[in-house]
Image (cartoon, rainbow, N blue to C red; front, top):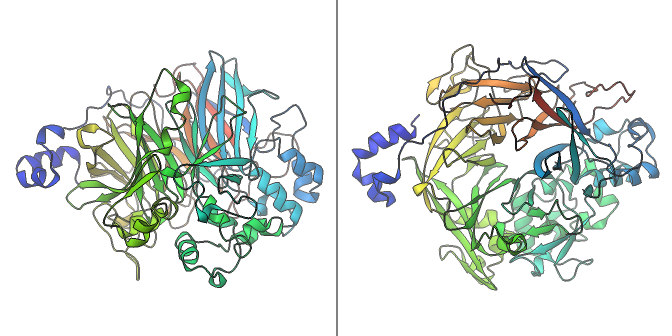
Length: 620
């Protein structure tokens, strides 16, 4: 495998590479990493224990869990929900912390107070309820358990507690009114019987990861929205609607597990064929202002968004990096037309409605390009001239059927692109490619340099250096710092390779990289989603740290059976590490975690906090 230092040495002898890319050798230098501090904690190893584990010298606690009240009312009656759900429980869920926590965002209020913004991706009826269903009551509760929670937290000694009844506390659910802005607002495909204007929608669903904007809002990402829609696509009279729904997997057989179509006909595509077009967006939420409604920013494109990471370019424009989390899907970025104004927060709230949407093409010579899909400038949309007439005749389709536009432009089909994070120390990007068990198999795309394993059971990580390390650039170089796996695996295709070298037998195994964060030294913290699979490690998911200077790799946290670890996030003083324990017990992995001694028999997705017992910063 080739890395930036090797590429640079080779490029000095291959002038044609820089002629081809249109760059000078001066622009591409080996990244300067942070100070070479070693990772001082003693590594964990993947295991199957029914407890959360952290290294010696660290401790953790549950900060907030499914059903905890955000108002001053009682907690959800978990055991009653499990055995005999009532209307009272449905009403309480509207005011209580939601299910399956994913993204976690920390927003400072003052020295001792902050806000957490937490996504609630989906629900597990087989864990929530004892009887098979879903009943209409169960579907209603699940709809309200989706969405986002905003919750105030405050310091209590060396850790944090959440504040019941805070005026900041807020639930955004599958029924909360969200406004639609940008190029798709008002388009014919966005109109429904309950919204003939195409400018608002009930709810946000399947909120996976997210990101923060420089002006202090959160971008929450709608991922597998197709899961909620039922009906018969083949009977739809409109061929365009039928084709786009097929490309996005609408309807889904999974809709039967939720039963939303039994409580609201908007989830039946034969009754409301356009409702599904109103999901699959990045949604902007202001955690500081509960009166400001969520806004779906359609200029960022519609696909199964995993995350949205923002970076301010040298010229002040804002760049949003995004992945489409499905096998053989694409990597995108959006560059705003306007510039970030650090002195006027309100002036930034329309930035994400105008700009240029790009999709990535990774080349086999370790270079790449961002291919323009379309540019929004006021009421004018300029589309790539290489797109088919369908997009030229109706430019808004570039944003509603973004996958179709990327298909037509020959973008690189990736192995489930998930989180996409900017390292502030190296000024490079790290992209998580979780896995793709279909890569290289019969009837599916073969391997390529950017997706070198087939089948790709273990996943890998790509590092991208934009030209001039400027996020607005349209060309880049890339490498693969990690092919995930087990250093002791018998199959070559499943071995752990770090910076081109096989890992020693003492290094912990890792698979299915999902979400990232960086500490202030530029170390990469990796949360996983898929270790438990028998095709991978058959062990619990966890959190790992890669020191890119020393090449050390360690396991920091281990989850419980059936869960994935989501939303890795540091407090701004780096003394607390937050993450989410999502769907504990999923996949017939018995657990009743978090075992709080309160007599509750159902596992509860939760946000946890980790700290050093000596009070120092986490990463030291």
